[in-house]
Length: 197
Image 1 (cartoon, one colour):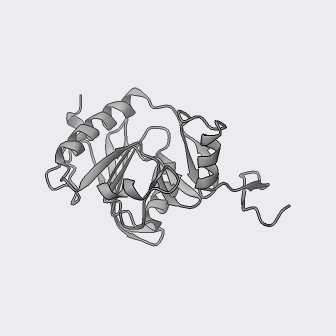
Image 2 (cartoon, rainbow, N blue to C red):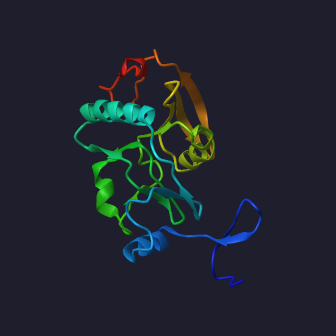
């Protein structure tokens, strides 16, 4: 094995080449990976994303409208925007709120998200709930995302993560569908998931 190539270990224990964001960018430029393929790069590993069902789409659409209405002029809303966290990790959250200036510092065709820049990241889950509440929550905490929501699209339950510290969060609060969701990132934002039709 060439020791100059980064590797990761697959579930079955065999070494596998670890990819970088730059590798992914080159593969997309060469047509090896199509732009319409849904995946994320997690610590060098390409992870395919599942198709979105109607419950997921309904929640994400309502959140997109509500967040967009509450955005101040210096912030923007990324909807399934590919965010480069590190050289070997890029995620595509359902929604992300961050400064508009973030798009100006792209070096690889993906938005470069530096630690602490994301004010709010939202993942809407159906089949990926454990993945979003586990590995993704750790990655977002490590990257100092200020507030991270995981929404169960079927139950309309939201876990609001605040206070990122290392790989964890100082607070994880569970909110039911009748609870009013608010965020410090968007003072004019409030909604109840139960009211989405």
